[in-house]
Length: 229
Image 1 (cartoon, rainbow, N blue to C red):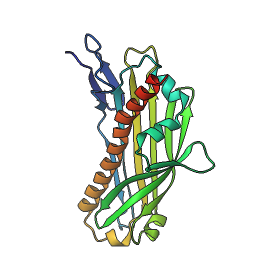
Image 2 (cartoon, helix red, strand yellow):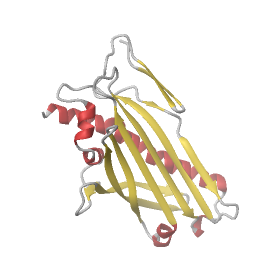
Image 3 (cartoon, rainbow, N blue to C red):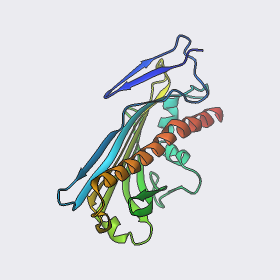
């Protein structure tokens, strides 16, 4: 049975549809560009900057109850609420579009911590693109107060559905994560290869978790929404 063959080149997404255009349940054949990693450290090891960007294209099974574009455009914040388990995300009191998100726990060389992210979700009505942008964060762990004050974490995400009349029903995703600031004293003696490896591992973990939510949970939420109409 033919399936969708997808190839994503840097800056370009090429899509080839199988002869019958068969869609497996919900989503399949996810295509991802090569991750773009960042790692910069001052010569005196006083500061560090690292992160990652990942783009993806996810085919989604179209539903009779409504188009993917209609689902994304109806309530962008529903993407946030459907992408994390109960207890991991909550709406900030007094707002309609800001959320507190409990992110995964991380090991970074000699440090172990969890992250609580404050993020805002908006909709670009012109392109029906749902956008997520971090507005602050909190490190959870022993003795991390001074480190949190010295580090800035930025997370952004964008999710755009194909048009209802497009040949391929799909979600285009773009997720990025960047951390920058003073290198904590406890890490200044660590070899650069160890810091680079830890930075890449943390970046992959964050980006991978975000892509899993975009590529699996959002299509599932779309199906539930369409079938309930």
